[in-house]
Length: 169
Image (cartoon, rainbow, N blue to C red; front, side):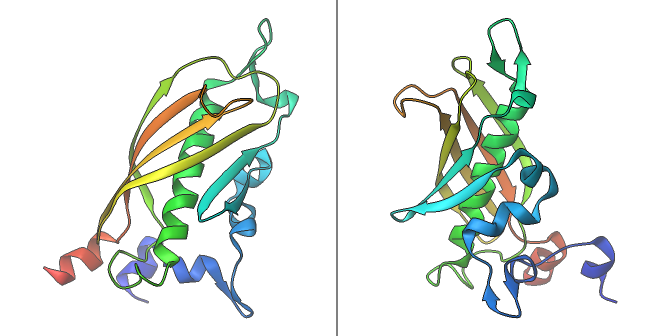
């Protein structure tokens, strides 16, 4: 057993490849238990990843407004950023240039801009930098109007296992 296997590190191919080849983006969140429980979905919208969080009463954090729970909004932002990075890692132009490990969150900073109401929520992310070891992503979620975001997050991911990064140095 390798050191990476002992630590539980997973390669992107382990999560996104099966006997039948690549797992479609639409099935990505089905492999993450909490994302699956929330019903999160990811699909391509042109060349960008579009994520959806269908409304459910269990997502309400403030029933007097009602408004989505802030932790759920933050989770959705992080999941949106993660799906975008994983999709970019699989792109032929990035294979071999950036890390292929399943990204690990280093930090996330969330700006809550307005309450999210009791309806479906959508998210997209923009990769600011996808490097060999680190990725910087800005994710935005909205409901009725993309120009009126509910929240925005700056996320940093480790995209290469530290042991692999040390081997390259």
